[in-house]
Amino acid sequence: MKKDIINSLSIKEKLAQMFIMGFSGFELVQENLNIQKAVKMGLGGIIFFANNIKSIEQTSKLSQNLQNMAKIPLFISIDQEGGLVERTINCKEKLEYLTPMALCSTGKVENVKAHTEIMAQELRAMNINMDFAPVLDVNTNKNNPIIGIRAFSNDPEKVIKYSEAVYKTLKENNIMAVGKHFPGHGEAWADSHLEMPAINLDFNELEEIHIKPFKKAVENGLDAIMVAHVHYSAFNQAEKIPASLSKEVITGYLKDKLGFEGLIISDDMAMGGITGHYEELTACIKAINAGIDLLIFRDSMNIQLLDKLADAVGDGLISEEKINQSVGKILSYKEKYNIIDGLNQEIENLDITKEQIKIDSIALESIKIEKKGDLIPLNKANKALILSPDKSKIHSYAQDRQKISDFLKLTSCKEVSYSLNPDDVEIQQIKEEIKSSDIVIFISYNAILNQGQIELFKEINKPVIAIAAGIPYDAEKFQKADTILLSFGYKTPALKALANIISG
Image 1 (cartoon, rainbow, N blue to C red):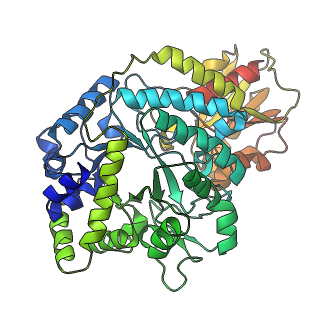
Image 2 (image 1 turned 180 degrees about the horizontal axis):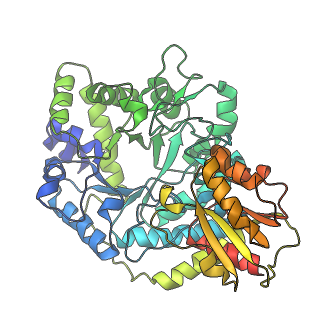
């Protein structure tokens, strides 16, 4: 069947199979005709973002409508990692998940499996068949601006242990897991959404730490890997080229040395790590020649790009043999995951309340008491001031309106929201609030990346419970606190669990 399909396709249609594209809208309308044309032409896949999802039923219908329109059944994909990167943030029946680092903190593989099982049920109910997870990065750089709590750990063995439960559980649910960001984004000092980070670790350190989880996942049968828009001098010393365009990284190492035969997918080609350095057509030609099978574009690309790529094949800039190999792999995995036959599985109704209770119970196990003082359980007679960073300015948390004060239920409590990086004027205003309190509960979010939070904490002259709600390394700055808690997340499940522990 696979050969018959390939032989029936034009070069342009084969190239279309090698793209996963995004678009705006909750339904297929005049405003997103571009994506509809691409799907009818033979587009390989769709990626959903928050602006595509408002309910489970709506998303399921959108997926089905796209599949019904498709020349070849589609990968319907999503970035659903949990806790921080969740594209379902606007969904009416939203399930609130935990971050990978919070799951790792529980110390139980069965928690990761149960958590992923719930997530898989939700994705299946939406007719989504590919998830860009788990994150296999080892977060060795405390100041990493983009990975942090998205990683399971700074220890490769823990990343291996807990990520395995994610990709195996997704696979059991007929959802294709995509491990990312090869060969490891955890040591980066910059965000590849904005620029191309450079990682200058020697080859041995890369292999022993950052590549280790990918190597193990390949051995365990992971079917797809996403490659980072990050430069690694260990692979490319002469030229500053991202791994996603590097033949040395993809073909020479991932395919030839690690023996990976699965799908190789680029990170979003509209990210600054690519667009700041390459013209669109050039980047696509380099990526395909390097060994990429599927290219992601978050927006419906200019359809003329496919014509230009077809011309590049005709001009000998891309070999037709490489195109056929990639399309053959894509179709093979669509067969493997029952996508090529267009099978819709019967999905049981998802009991949101019941599943959220399970997640919340795991959240309670994830909270780490870094320093146990005398302030918890909290004396409810004390007048408490809660200082919490403004959620509306934090990616993926803007829709989460809950505050820890909603769950503490103290008789005398005030919660003041502060800017993510407060200036001297704001700090002085908050000092006035502190004067009238008996105890302060100070919540930080990535304070080591936002010096204003550290300066604010220094001004607290009352007994204080410090909570690191983002990266756990903030705790190093809070040693004067009576009690230090780590939650590895700042969404509702973490806030409920924190309130439970603080209240005793």
